[in-house]
Length: 160
Ligand code: IDP
Image (cartoon, rainbow, N blue to C red):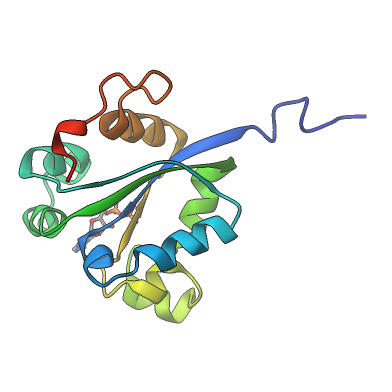
């Protein structure tokens, strides 16, 4: 008999969640954390950080040529964000499903129970981030938290 626990298909995964500045300033942090825990994720790391232009630009470098990029950096540096490392089986894709489509306005119609539908405003101010692949998750977690097993490289100096 094939046991998924023994054959690796139910391996715990980590992903990076960010409650963006609009979510923090609109006091959605506790509500979103409750949804995260009710959905079976463990919050294994968490910190509040004020992003600066440098780390926001690095974090979103894949979008650097796009017309919305300058606004995105202004938005992401407009106030503190809440960074969390979430862990569960299938965490990367389950967190993406839970947050819903990028455009919060469309999410309100197509995915009304998603976090972006409930807490986001529009295509830009969509309240939350989720890593889009296991590779992005590993890179993004390392960027903000360093090696989370050893604590080396953690961006503590920016912490509020
Ligand atoms: P994702 O966050 O759903 O993965 P991405 O395409 O990676 O979406 O875009 C990163 C972030 O940039 C979005 O979450 C949103 O805040 C912002 N963004 C994406 N597309 C646009 C746009 O066309 N106009 C303004 N902001 C955008």
